[in-house]
Length: 70
Image (cartoon, rainbow, N blue to C red; front, top):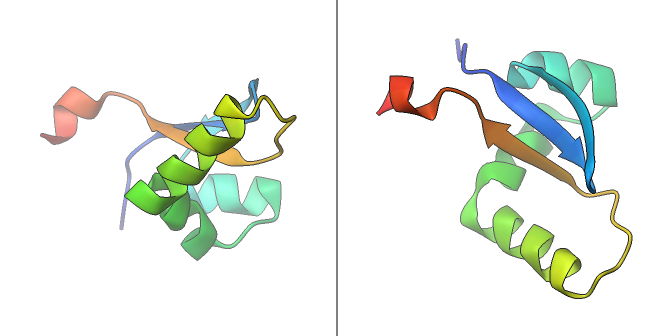
């Protein structure tokens, strides 16, 4: 079980923090989608949206306390 805590942002707006399961339940998204957003391809898509200055509903996850998991 993954107990890592993530901060979830939708566009520039903070949504919540919690585990992947908690975030998936609250945002009505599949856990597999959230895992994809953490992958290099997902990050690249999010950066592309930011560079184009489009309003984005894309979800971005930031691992909190990352130094604890290295």
